[in-house]
Length: 278
Image (tube, rainbow, N blue to C red):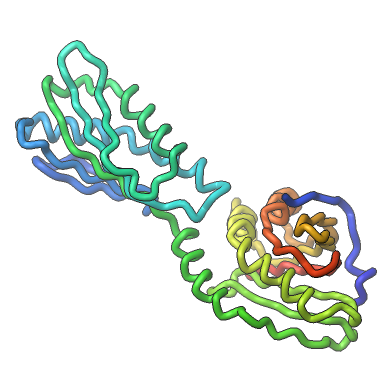
């Protein structure tokens, strides 16, 4: 396929159950795991009710996390807190260890737990809380970072149309990126563009997931033209989209905007085809 045949339409610029006594562990959709331990001075009945009250807030805590990972899926971590309840006083929450949890997540969780009522918990009561935040996209990205380390040299070849071409796919082959440039383009230019997608692929995995909503198949291609200037700033022009879901064009544009590029030796242009597997 020639470069002109890729088409263009829109530009975008890139820059659980009841708690047991003493300790409990609750998993919620594999995103947030809670454990509650006593401080040594709280009776087991109060600790159990305190733990249940905290578990009742996991829906709000999960919302905090999911809002954050919508744009930054690589964020995971363990947050350790001390929650204290005294008579006629607001809940007292102390952050003991953020363990990699991002500050906006800590702030959101703190607001959720200090606003909670704890109406069934007799005072005084206190507990140590551990919240573990993880998601499948972050685990996948960790694996893919290992794989991308193998791309110190990208194999660039000449395709049947006479264009420079290189491709790369995520580990489970859900998304494949193919980059094409004119035959006169240096192989390093094609490498640079493809390397950007190996670092920014997570947003496309998320876009593919959105295109499965409602039982639709995400299978299809998303075409775009990319121009990277000497500072590494990119502009994309979205072309043909064959993914059926109505959200595909919008989430694809947002994904393209998140692709990071190194500074090229000279401004470059290339075509990109992103394929979503069924």
